[in-house]
Amino acid sequence: MVDLSVNIAGLELKNPIIPASGCCGYGESMSQKFDLNLLGGLVFKSTTLEERAGNPAPQYAHTPSAVLNAVGLKNPGLATVRQEKIPFLAQFEDLAVIASVAGSKEEDYVEVVKALSQEETVKAIELNISCPNVKEGGVSFGTDPQVAARLTRLCKEATHLPLWVKLTPNVTDIVAIAKAVEEAGADALVMINTLTGLAVDVETGLPQLANITGGISGPSIRHLALRMVYQVYSEVAIPIIGVGGIESVDDVIAMLMVGASAVEIGTANYAKPLVCPEIIQALPGRLSELGFDSVASVTGHLHRQLANQK
Image (tube, one colour):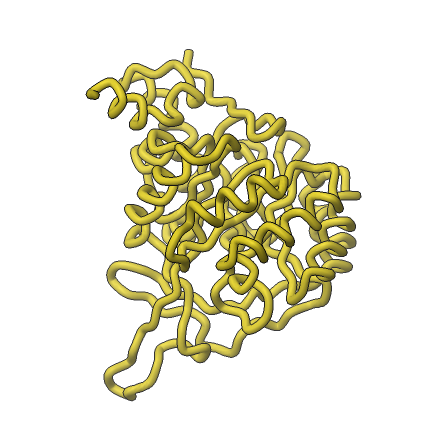
């Protein structure tokens, strides 16, 4: 019997599979395809104090190796999320709901964190300091260790819930950012968000996205995500939730081996809506084949293997 349960900073998840913020909205569409109670958790769409219309269309560019998006944190705003979206998610009593929070300034983050922390359905807060597709907030908070640490500290003081901080890969040294937010009180790290990229329509000579640049996601970033989680795992004591290009059960296991305690699955949900439950179903058998009796025993396995070679 393989134990799929994991503990992320005091939050018990029955398995390590979590749809990533922005890729499942607030769960409505996904719930029509399968029972959300099957999931370890669900991170709902990054929510801001006021409603955001997002960036102009086109917001997506599809390439053979990746998807670029510039949605721009489109969401209905805090009040609507509390009145309509969270009550919908409350019906899934066996689902750990994680609230993703974004903002244009520190005060916005703090106010949204405080409000969502009052919702019984919400079990943890994910601080989005890494969105590359907005002109204010987002990644601007996540590229400077001191700025990231200050925002983390303010938000930690505003909640009694576990605080996960989502890191951007658009930095020279992600370890420095990770250590700074850990010292400021982060309970877990989520890494990585999308990389900033550009797609060009050679027929028109114009960008394929109205925003010009967008966040690169999909399988093309998986190996970069693995490398960054590998780097950070040895430098921090808090759990890491790995995200970036995960599409299969072996992708999940690789992310666990480099140091993740759980994973978030994003872009793969669009092409394969049942990817999360299918991976959950396949995970026990694959772990057993590899000689593991629990998900927790896989975390950091690559590090231990390398240490044994010395």
